[in-house]
Structure formats: structure tokens, C-alpha cells
Amino acid sequence: MIPSARTRQMESGAILKQKLKALAATGNLSTGFQEESLVRAVQEGANFVGCDAGTTDSGPYYLGSGNPRGPREGTKRNLRIMLREALRAGIPVIVGSAGHAGGRPHLEWTVEIVKELARENQWRFKLAAIDSEINKEDLLHAFRRGELTPLRPAPDLNEGTLQRAERFVAMMGIEPIQAALKAGAQVVIAGRCSDVAIYAALPVLKGIPRHVAFHAGKILECGAATVAQRLYADCMAAELDQEGFTVEPPNPALRCTPQSVAAHTLYENADPYYLVESGGALDTTAAQYEAISDRAVRVSGSRFVASEKYTVRIEGAALAGYRSIVVAGIRDPLILRQLDEFLRSLRTVVERKIEDSLKLPGDAYTLSFRVYGRNGSLGHLEPVSGFEGHEVGLIIDVVASSQSMAADILPLVWHTGLHHPIPEQEGLISNFAFPFSPPGIDVGPVYQFCVNHVWQLNNPCEPFRTTIEDL
Amino acid sequence: MKELWEFTKLIRSKNAGPFELTFDIMFKDADCFDQVMKSGKLSAEAIAELYKIELGQVQFFAIKQLLTVKISIPRRVFSGDVQDTDVYGGQFHGPLVRMAVESS
Image (cartoon, rainbow over all chains, first blue to last red; front, side, top):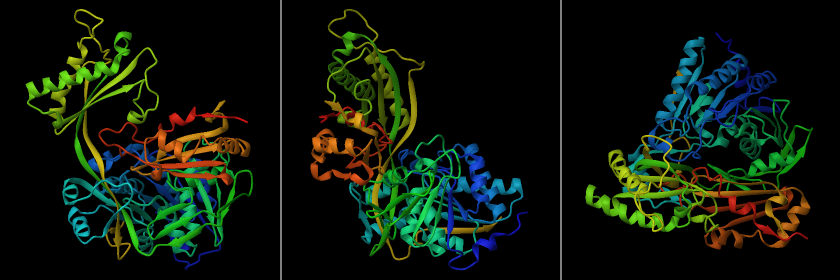
């Protein structure tokens, strides 16, 4: 269907031209972008469209469960526009961290959407799917050979934790994506992938220096989040050359300023000057940000420091139990003024009841009282002591080794708490305002991140398996 | 006496991966940046005390060029763990917003 203009861009040699234009569709594939921004940017000569689809920000659930964060329809809409425009222009599409966590089920979910789109639209292209899920046995071998090094802080790692984990992924650098592009893939769907690598892979392949490509990648990875005032999720473009890059939003309503771009270098990164990637680190200490217009910023002066050893970050999630919760309001000022004591004595009574009726000792489950209006957001780090206010929201949170156990414990807690006495009130009182019937909610499995390690590799592509198909 | 937010245009916290938190504090202008830095209230020591961690674990960067202070600390409870209260780490900056700063 689509004339193969791919050859125009892909096979024209190591340095295709002086400049290369990278387009980020948006900061996260599921959140979307303005269709006209993407269409315009591709028409104006983008050399590829990239998009990040994942993060660990939403916690360990997605990696542990294998579920994508979705929504499927939104993801499909965004992929449809990206693929349609890229195929028309004959340029590659690169999606990283497919399905949010980048595991095998997440990759399969995304690839299935891409294939569905190809079928529905009679599109023809070469598709590469890069699997970044690491089999437990392979990681155990790596652990025994001493190839895993902890980052700080890291959970304790031993064979037991590795055995108990649900799923592991390795975060790929630019090399597996480059290998897929070299094999002729026009659409690359990568499992867990460094955000920067999505945008640096093709430019480095085409001869753009790493310090330029990696810094541009860091700026592009959140899409329009780099602008001074982000009105909505949208595209971002950068034009890269041998010395630096110019970042400019394709949407004329948005603008970048030197401070907005420089500030983004800091975002979600512990060290503002040093961004550690597979294969080396980007040092932005001497980077310069200069306004080219009231919307475009020129960035130059960063350095790339190659690392001695090639490592990839490993992420893993293990099942921690199953959660059941109750949400309740407390409005009685007599309870509120002794809330800590009330919850402490309630806990004592409840633990005894659970032991008596369910034969479960206190260490068989985790019971938390989360008090919103006091320290619900910060927990033990809340520096404001005491309590001011006329009500609190209470979440009774039970995590146990099975859903049925959590669901059995929960009513013992809330029903006991409902009528738990205080000295100032005589007779039966009802302490909790439940908004729902039934009060309890089974939340499902709870996972935890169980590794924060890097794996030393001899070959950057080694743990990643690429499947190439002609659609 | 003024509060920190009166000198800034952005105070935020966020995960830097599941195991660390990072705070970005961006000032309105050089004068605001200088006043807060001179007051000594915003420091690695203050962060260590406020967030109950060892001083050696606080990464503190005052970036005059960007009129920004960036601070990173390890999470004592990792993102999404059973006892975590803030999976994205987006509200840990709360106690910094109204930090008292002497204005000159």
C-alpha cells in the first residue's frame, strides 16, 4: 500500500545529511498528542517518530502482574496516527517500554495492536519486536557468576528473592534498536528500554555524536513536558547535528525557553549533571541553552563519558501479598482528639480477635491504618505533629498471603473498629462513616520492586531477543 | 519572615526511579535564589533532619545558572511497597513549601 520511500531515509549511508530531525510523539504512548502537531512535524521532515510507553513511576504492579497500563483504545488511536504518518513519509517508528513495564506480556499486547492496525489498514512494513524479559534461570546464572552489581539503595538480593520474583526485565540501551533498524525494520517495538535510547539509537547510527544524541533523547523523552507552559500532552521535535541540537515544539501554541529545557534535564533524575545510561554517562555540566527564537532552544556543550563496562539495569517485581481495604470517615471530635490512642487500642483488640477466630499470628498479615487529614501522604515522614481539623479519612489496609485471608481479616478489623469504645461515650457507638456497602474492597495482588542492580554484559544485545516479521 | 514558596516558581518532588526521591526547587529570580541560599535554611542538613535520614545520604545541588536547587534522597520505603504512602513520590515536597526563610 505505502510506496517504499523507506529507502530514501534508511539506506543513504552513515551520515544521511548534516541534520537529523527526531520527533517524540508524546511523553507516554497511552496519554496521546494533538494529531495536527504530529502530522505537521512529519511533513516538515522528521527522520523518525519515537515514543516512550512505560515507566516504573506507577509502581511495581504492572511488571509483577504482566498487565499493561492501557487503555487499549487510546494506545491504538495514538499508534494508528504515528504509523499512518510515518509509513506515508517512509520513516521509522520506535516505541520503547511497550505496555508500560516492558515485559513479555506487555510487548505481546503492544505488538498485537500494531498487527491489528496493519490488518485493518492494509499496511505493509517490516516489524521488529525486541523482548527484554529475562528468564529467571538466566538471571540466576548471572547472579552466581557475580555479574549483578547493586545500585544504591538496593533491596537485598539472594537466590531466594530471585526465585520468588514474578518477572524480570533488562533495560536495553541503543544497540538492540540499532540492530533492528539495520535489519531493515521500519517499526520497532521494544520491551523495557531506556527512554533516552529510543531517541538516541537512530541518530547515533547515522553518525550524530553520542553527547548530542543522548542529551536530545533526555529532552525529548517526555514529549511536550519540556515546554514553558504545558497545556496538554503533545509532540516535541529536535533537530540534531554534529555540534548540538535545536528543540522546538511542532505545535505553534507551545514554546520552549532555555530555562524550561534546562529544567527538564533535571526531571526524574537524581543527579542534575550526570545521566547514567547503558554504555556511558551524559555529563551536562558545561551544557549551554540558548534561545533561537521565542519558541526554540539550541542546546550544546554536553559531554559523553563512555563507561569501562557495559551494563544494563535490571528491574524485577515479586508478589508481596493480597490487599483488602476499607475507606471510612471519622467525624466525632471525641475520637479525633485521641485518634492515636484509639487506633492503638483498636489494633490490640483486633490482633487478639484475629488470633482467636482465624488462628493467625500478627506476623501473618500487615495491618495499616492510613489516616488522611493527618499523615496519609507522608506516613512516618510527616513533620507536623498533632492534629487540626474536623474530620479524617481512614483507610484500613490489610495485606495477607491470599486474597481470601485478607478478605477474612478485614471485617474483623472494621467491625471491631466501628464499635470500639472511648471513655467519653457510654453505650454502643458507631465510629466510622462508610461511604460504600459493602465497606470492603478486594484490591488484588500487591507486588514490590525486588532488584535495583545492573548486569554486566559482554554484548549489549545479548539478553534481548528480536523477532522480525514482514507485515 | 517569609515562606519558601514566596521565593519560588516551582517546588516539586518525584521518584527518581523506585528507590530514590528527588526535589526540584526553582526560584523566581537571582535575588530570590540568593536570599534563600544566604538564609542557610535550605541545606543538606535541613533536608536530613526533615526527612529523617543521614546527612551523607543527601545529594544537594545549588545550581545558580538555572536558579534551581536540586535535592535527592534515598527512599526509606520503596515505591509501591506494602507500607508506601506515595507511589509517584509527588507529595513529599509538602513540608518544604512553607519552610520559614528570613527575608532581607
